[in-house]
Image (cartoon, rainbow, N blue to C red; front, side, top):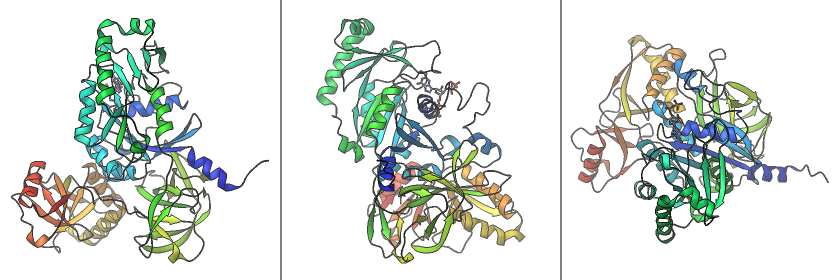
Length: 542
Ligand code: G4P
């Protein structure tokens, strides 16, 4: 019998989806790993197509640099493809100078994350920040320790660093035998086999050739050699005694990270990691939401009606269209073109609307989309949503609707005073700043003492200011001047503001919601201020 009823289809489609983001410090290998995930999914004939660094030519899926050339960063969207029966949604989390609130917000749309570390560097700053955002929501994180084909740090030391710096237990799923030129392969700790690494003539452009050899066999002994064998045995014994055993429950709860060693450039370890990933990483799961009267409600991806929330807005992507695209992540139900939804903004019903121009975004080509499922990301053109808004296809009165959890605010690290170059443009300038901050392009802060004074803008990454200037000119016809302010980090202040003792160089401001936020010239000043105010809490993410 041909069962065409929507419920089983929705359950199957949801179960086979893996929506995740890759978090990494610049240069750890995020682009290379993404490319290899595409290669192994059959999306690329040979690797090197995503970004051809040698020729500097843009490949089809690299639309990012193009936007940079036009002076507007933006970026993050999703790539979708199929791997071994699973639908993979990779959310792009821009790094480098593009690092912005979008990078953080995108993580809220992910059901899991892959953390890529460079084996010679370990945990670096940007990884730490992104990891903190995952930890806040209990997002399960898998760790891929990359570049094992180059001389790296001691693997045991790397595991300890993950645990100590990030505050999560690490469980090695495989173990490298040798590193750099001596890199032989990894021991799969589940099967106990050696996955021997073989360089192919095609380098990393084709799938890696990998041989699975039982560890106790003569062949394995030959491949490993006597010297490495001693070291390996010692390390494996140590892991067996002192290492953390893998627990699926603890991983799903974000309490333990399974760790894999490999090399994205040479493809070594990619396939076993990929297979483990689709096996371990969760499909879209229930999420907590809030009804309009404030009561919490659990939204199930399969049994709840269609719902999604906006996590990113990309304006003026295409100069020919002059439009904005809002990216929504589907949390529950089946999405169809022309679906009629209710739109909610900050606890209030806004309007009912038909979604007639849904888009998926692969490279710069927009493809009109007919149906999508929980975990998928849909682009909606000129939809008039703000970041964090919920859309919901629920019959019944609007007051019975719900909203997905509001997006957290992330601590800005760049601060500037922005003024219109021509003072007669003040009105358009104020309007632009108000709208762009409502959209989440920048945060607007005011002095706590003198809230009527000039506002200043704050962002996670400096490029957000460039985007702001560009958009103020392009959309509001206002040229601006930006003067950097000497602060490098900030925290929200929790406690009685009247008893807060400001330290030298710190500055007390108010965010748009009226919450107190303290700005500091350096991390050192931040720590010192916290010491001087032991009765207050200094919160990084609100
Ligand atoms: P990112 O997106 O995280 O910033 O890193 P990306 O993948 O661009 O990788 C950064 C550099 O590290 C690249 O070299 C890349 O080839 C190299 N790389 C990535 N993974 C591995 C690996 O497993 N082993 C080795 N040996 N190198 C790796 P590049 O010199 O910047 O570019 P290219 O000239 O190689 O293209």
